[in-house]
Amino acid sequence: MSWKRARPETPRGYHHGNLKEELVKAALGLIGEKGPNGFTFAEAARMAGVSPAAPYRHFRDRDELLADVAARGFEAFEAALSRAWDQGRPDPETAFHRLGRAYLAFAHDEPAYYSAMFEAGVPLDASPGLRAAADRAFATLRQAAEALIARLPANRRPPALMMALHVWAMSHGIAALFGRADGGRRPLPMSAAELLEAGMLIYLQGLGIGPESAPPPAG
Amino acid sequence: MSWKRARPETPRGYHHGNLKEELVKAALGLIGEKGPNGFTFAEAARMAGVSPAAPYRHFRDRDELLADVAARGFEAFEAALSRAWDQGRPDPETAFHRLGRAYLAFAHDEPAYYSAMFEAGVPLDASPGLRAAADRAFATLRQAAEALIARLPANRRPPALMMALHVWAMSHGIAALFGRADGGRRPLPMSAAELLEAGMLIYLQGLGIGPESAPPPAG
DNA sequence: GGCCGCATGTTAGCGCTCCTCACATGAGCT
DNA sequence: AGCTCATGTGAGGAGCGCTAACATGCGGCC
Image 1 (cartoon, chains in turn cyan, red, orange, green):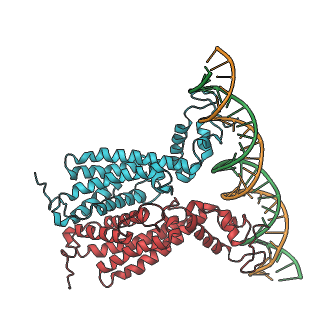
Image 2: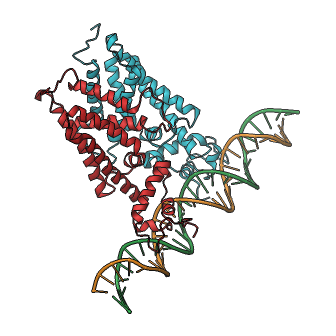
Image 3: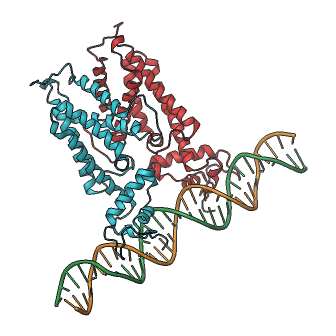
């Protein structure tokens, strides 16, 4: 009995009624606080006010819950990136910079999701929906890369996939190494967002999509 | 008694004599096999042929061993990067490409070290030597950045620190997302090394250190 | 309306891990 | 030779993942 909530906020009977959702929420909270390893199945159950065995009715094991959290994270990620990209309006450059900021904002504001997605070691094919969600998120990046590349003369266009991978890698690298809420790594002379912005400007310049080399055709 | 080695390769008495080193080696092996979380204090002890309590004579706890592995990883990393950079010989561009390949080679060939360094969640100040070792490794990248920047006209030089951070971020991003031994993430149309090489060429081009924009002064 | 099936939750418990404490051993110094 | 102390052992508490057998009550069926 000791695992029961001291004072249940929502009185309930034998059946919880919404346990799966509440377990996911609890897991998110725990991952956010103590990292993906600090998260414990038993503690999530405690938070939801159920016995330590109850979660097994909803998830095969701890890894499956983690995979579920990661999948939801990719959904939210894709939504945030799509919203930022906004179909490239008003122009691809502006939208692209918004996209970069949105990437870092997500990593910064949703560390629990970001951990589950990229740092918890969840294999991408842990669940059917996971890889699909991850692919949709990446597709947004790729779409942005394509729109930017389209502004180049046809004979100087790099592969869009490659460019998307570069953007993703740099964003993830900055988020992973410097993007945490000052957590414990390295003090920087500039913010992660500024660092990414500068890096992307240089990269785009290298492609020839720079402020001085590619005036918008209908400017 | 069941924890004893079935057939001790090196017969020993009550005292092991070299336990600390052997625990670190065992940890490396386990991390390489099963990721930084799969690694277990008790199993490392078993591998070394000692009781599960013995490791506590050499490491305060599991995290301290992990931090020790990470610190050794940074030492090896620094050594590998320095060797590749080779003081910028024969010229900074050539040496820089070697450096990039060395970065990915390390991440690929020493996954256990790389995990402990970047993915195990070890705080950088877990031990005095850890941050120092990490700083030395980063200093190598920064040194390379400085040498490359020095080839630019004085009025177009970006901050070396920023450039080093960009290089690090892109390298780490590629290593973390695509660099694993095909482990389980995403199939690519090109190797991680090629991806990094292409990304760095574009980035350098953006800085004006490109094949067609910065012929060596003594060419 | 009453009954029953089955999803959901509980209890008990195995095996494992981390870590601690009291005790054993023997290497190296005096 | 004798002592000391670093190093290793044994036993055990607390917590976790997971399973099996049992309890409960919601929802569909007659």
